[in-house]
Image (tube, rainbow, N blue to C red):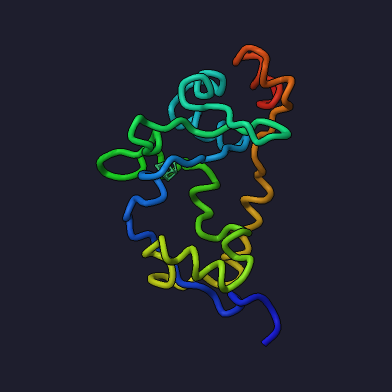
Length: 164
Ligand code: SF4
């Protein structure tokens, strides 16, 4: 049958192992719509949310905005009961594991599954559902701050990227 290796769907249900929210240092990159949704969930302005919970990550040609981490490397929003912002979580989180890098080939899917017990188990996601998650992340994008703007004071650095 023609089509991607996931044409008949893929199985995934989060096992709540916490591996992708805790453990090794990592990045949860944000789009402007992520910041809008999360700040609304907290009932604070987007600027306030950025100042409290975000950091800039140097990507070489630009800077991206990521959630901060606690000192044990867990996500700022990881709590005893799991993700404390689950309903408003970033698209990077809600679209996992249906990322372009993971779906690049069956080999990359199987490689990722070695560190995620929820993959290859649980609910069957159709090709359409998988591609909706894939395109949702692509459409949302991430905030990319010009190198020169990243040198500005924090408030100025983010303002223009939030559409203010
Ligand atoms: S926002 Fe929630 S789902 Fe995403 S990494 Fe943090 S705790 Fe995990």
